[in-house]
Length: 575
Image (tube, rainbow, N blue to C red; front, top):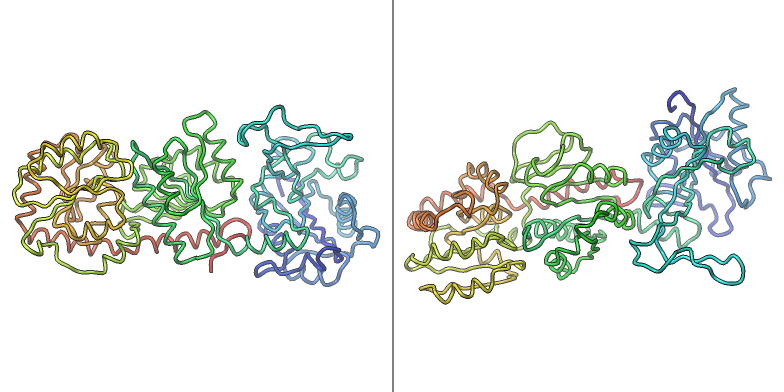
């Protein structure tokens, strides 16, 4: 019932089908095709009765098994291949009303051949009907193509001028998944009345199974987890989010080999796009910095139709997250702390915050270093146990300030360490490092030349061989902790600094604060103090090994698996 109005749902399902015999009860995944619709109808907040209109006893038995009502058999005249189902629905409603003396105000038609539409989408259509005073509401799929029609003998374009897909005016295709009408519309000569509203469906929810090819596609979708990563990385913002999302994607690939994954990224941050593309994953790009950013983003997400969306961004705004809530996908937010989310208490999504361990009154909240996500090579290397003390008398230091090092802390640390005797220094530059010209000039002036590496594939080996690591306050603090290596942290921004103030309590790093504010002699003295104190380095390394067990990506997978299994419709079940 909605606002005192009685709601009936009619599911037409005849026995004969010239394409696929008994299509409506053919097994799709673990359920008969019709059961996917009946299950979602049952979960609607508004539907009072779910009635199946069929001419076939076998379909009736299946419908009853899934708790639908089958109070009549459809007459033979209505069991043919009709061009429109209004007469079938009218007969069903009139029959139920006459049998039980009831009257319904709202009639919902749900085609059994649309298995991926959700209870949430059904309720949204009912809300639109009542809140906006429409005569009818239909589900539609947005189409942005160079479409034509043929009113006579020649083709006529349905577009003003050829443009890029995202710039074309949208057309709307009625998909048949949901039709909601007021009761009096059924008794009129109009199919839908005069005022018609709509709910926008994604590709998966709009899929209609007409023939064996459609059924094959639905079979693929019902068993195929579809995960979209919304992430960016570049010279200014850094590459930590890209590395983290890539680590999760690689973990999913190893565990769920049939998972379909896609990265959605901004085109104006090319370093991140290039890194993901080179890793072999599919990437879709959207323009950045324009007025239609959110709208364009949602169009791409609907087109891909994921059942899980993973957000890995520096800050997640409430408008974006609210828009995602209407897409029917489960949302997983990878953040450092709750400060990275606007209004986290108002979310119905999953939050994973590795940098935060405080308890929070949230339904699906997972926090602390146990959820630190490491790359595969680090998980393997973390199994090796070697003391953080110098192994052969030489003192090895690694400088690694992230994928972009926006504050150029690499050069600052090099200058600070140049006066330290008997030091082997390795500098690892990220793919978005933009100070190479200045660095080359500095190298010519240093007393001892460090080893310079860029875009390395064996980062775990490099850090593992270090006696001390100088880094920023991002993923690297977890990586060196897992490897049992002590670190000195120089933060790139105030947000990093505030997080590292809390992280330092674990005893795995020395936190010097905001890198731009730290004097070179403070960096030098702090490094010397640790290099000359092997016992302290060992204590820090041991504390790190206890803190980060390198199983964070697997824990995130388990969280995502639960999200996928309660995700939209029946798509993407993980076993």
